[in-house]
Amino acid sequence: MGIQAWERRVDLPGIRPALEPIPDAPQAEPPQAVTATEPPPPEPLDSEAVAESPVAGLDWQDLDARVAECTLCELHKGRTHTVFGVGARDADWMIIGEGPGAEEDRQGEPFVGRAGQLLNNMLRALGLRREAVYIANIVKCRPPGNRDPKPEEAAACRPYLERQIALVKPRLILAVGRIAAQNLLDTDVAVGKLRGRAHRYGEARIPLVVTYHPAYLLRSPEQKARAWDDLCLARALLEEEA
Ligand code: URA
Image (cartoon, rainbow, N blue to C red; front, side):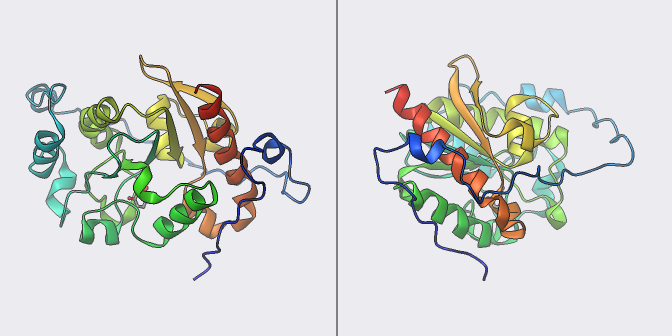
């Protein structure tokens, strides 16, 4: 299926060697999505509905229930299941992706398709079990036809993600893919320029690292060396802050 086992190239705690350039790693920048025309302005948010949805004080159970009944954006109309998030609720690592695909919508769990298998392998290469991290998405309902979530959909879903981050209190956020990176960092800079360095997220200044989406890596396996560098950077940041 094109999913290779990810092998750790160095033994822990030898992190720094993994941060050195890998000789055979390609140096070319990955192709960036090119849009011929300006994207249409986002449709206005139903701000009243968002304002009526305070989630700041909710515990896990109530937050999950609120997401399960959410109708704040159009995406709820096509969903089979909401995809809330999965993993250790006190994890050091929080992995944030884009949104559910068909399989995630069917199962109600993030990253369970082919991209999810690769994500699991990436984590395993770091010595992390999937169950030891917390995995969530920018949007909790599947965008139809696997299109990108619209800005207003991401905005409507944002309080849920913010609350998840506040509850988990991760020591490191790994943003996988353009949509996660651009939403979390509030930028339209290309993922190729955001990856490979340390960012900070929110008032808590949580270290955040951007890497390629595993679905992109399935299409462009030559970028896996760069993704591995990103994972090693994330691990190094986490250990630095310990
Ligand atoms: N891609 C994502 O970004 N999230 C998922 O949950 C599945 C695929």
